[in-house]
Length: 217
Image (cartoon, rainbow, N blue to C red; front, side):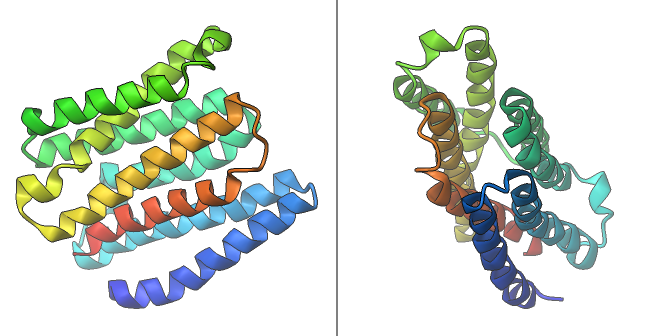
């Protein structure tokens, strides 16, 4: 199976899961909607798993990037059942991704440290009104944003470091993930309800599609 064939099969399914997720939520079927949400994320798990198995001849369960996608799928459901637990599991997923990347790429402090600092500053400014009201949750939220910002700081300069346009998949994917997560947290802590749900899901699944696609090449 090639990446093109996989995309032809997976993208229509992603669209179907997207529609099903919001139809179920519209009818207040929140728990069943989690099946659709996790189903969409499972397509990224499958993409990474097939890429490692078919293209690289590796056991995906022995590769940290595969666990990144797997943990994201579990965190998808947990986030809507217990927000803090889901957020911490997403943090664990990003730690898997960061460890893998640091083992395989040269880290550019000249690029990554300023990007990390700017991402943290942007997040703190975005949540300047919410943080004082969060109590102990603020600590865990800041820790998660720190980890998420580290993922972004590693991924964003990759096309420049490697001089490889394919690395834009990593960069755009992780930027989409970062923006999506900021929108999730803003929606949760500012009590915005369902207003941001569709752009959140579009950005999140775009991120997973792009990040998993890298391993096919």
